[in-house]
Length: 204
Image (tube, rainbow, N blue to C red; front, side, top):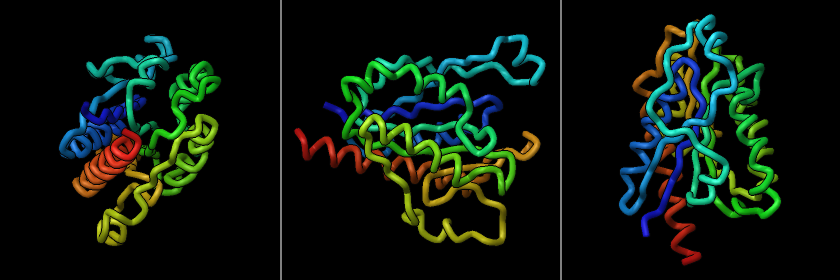
């Protein structure tokens, strides 16, 4: 049986989605791992999204709470809103009460990645405040620490991400994830997939 890693994300303008795609590639590079992208449901009406100039959603399937039980590990991604995860992702997690009651996700590893508008816009607080969601489900938070090596210490160029997980800066929306940020995302996917595979093997 393959180890299943689900990359579950919300992306309004595509920045988080680009990180998610690289994380999936990284996870899939681990032998015996099946990595899949999922989007959480949108909560805003089309009229509002149109006024916000949000592009059409990608073709990644929309996840339901019960789909989470099929995975062995996760990487959750979202943009920040005032230093915390976007309401769309929080609404999805709020709908997982049934899984919380049965502790169906307890013991499963999970990582976090994110996008913020500026360097002081929540690269760490967005991840830090999201950990509470994992804790109540009994999940195991897997940060990347400094396993990305020299890339963690880049000082010449603007770079998103932290020991909590991969990240990017959207700025006014025109800035896209850099090669270094995408490489960090690939690393995160590979790193979490490796740990997920080890954990699954130890309980088999």
